[in-house]
Length: 145
Length: 411
Image 1 (spheres, rainbow over the protein chains, first blue to last red):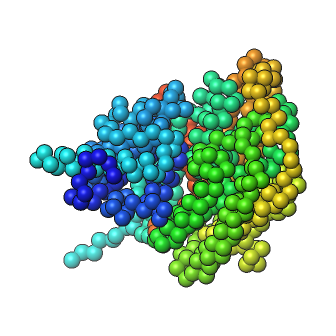
Image 2 (cartoon, chains in turn green, purple):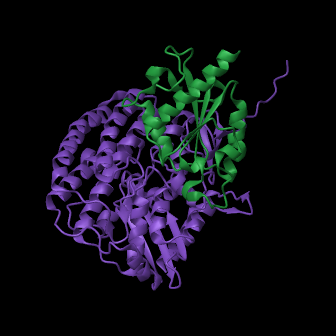
Image 3 (spheres, rainbow over the protein chains, first blue to last red):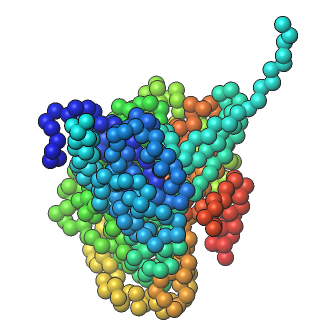
């Protein structure tokens, strides 16, 4: 359980997953987190099909030049309050692609990232922990109202 | 009331690059008349990360880890093909035991990848129960991968001249137990996919790829074998330990007696291949000879050896999605590759989408597209990005590029 999270969650958390040029490694680990072994749906965490329904944005990949404007647009389409989680080393630092000519990342130069998840790819446990941390941010924002 | 003549015009639907039905960024433009697809256009290049370019600044051992990150699902076959290319260029002998260990890893990746695909295919036709069921089996395969390599997804097990981890006798019972688990669950999967009415309704006679088209468009892997073309690198070329093992090229004909080349056949094909992989792993474990697992454990010595090489090499490997080809050239001045070229299987399997999707309904797009098991992050290696402008690759251009590349490789 992440620190600062109340025992009963005020709301279910809907997540939108955006691949900004990732190698699929993080993406399959995100799906693995939804599947029976980890089963995040029991906490009310769901992957949704459109950013307009989402509370949390999961971004994977180092953001290629072609995807830059699309990632920004997805972020703008999300309703407030929102949180951004950057999953995987390449989104955080560039990782093995750091010197590439076609990257505009790391993601924190494009979007305000709230939680960084490192690992290449991170384990599903780490991704779930990150989503729980984003939850804390959203709950804190709610409490301030 | 005057009756105006209503002219029917076709309309365009853009799908992607970010779309709930797509797991990876790729852009399609469908031309439709009513519900029917008239034409399809594919645009690539959203996942281009300049991997081949980056390789020119790194030594072959570093490139291995770059190759691994071409695609997270094919994280064994790219380093494998790259290693084969380097070994081909530098005439490096691989110990026999390492060859067998490499087959174990390759077949384990095939099991993971095909089971993952079965789940995605089930999800595309709205059968989510099967998605969860297959992914539960896949977790078991990932556990075994972690047990053997230390990682779940990016394995980091390949090295030039061998493999990095041995399978010790105390690991064998666990591998055998897991293989038995896959066999038991394989029967369940077979029952779900081959006898279920829903799966049959959606997949039979959908997305047909004829044998002629498969040959003409150079489809590879399960996609082409499901159309009845016997094309498999494992039988066509002797690499790793496949020459010693009992591996034969299977088509859906072995089970059903006929080949239709539809989505259903591609499902059968992949299921048969999972079974084949389980048998191959068991065979490897039984027949594995004792000995070293790497020919030259000292990397600086290996780098010095590669530094002096002036020449080129080609590595071909049968990845879960089909044949992957890596080409490497060394100039004799530096240990870094002078050129590195990757041809991923999805590159070939995108063109068959056009005959598959033409005449189908919009609702069939996801399952037909998914039936070739596309992998965009592999494919985007070939997209052209110049002066930060995106160049559109039409099917003719793509085909031309493909032909040119084959010619280049033949030289």
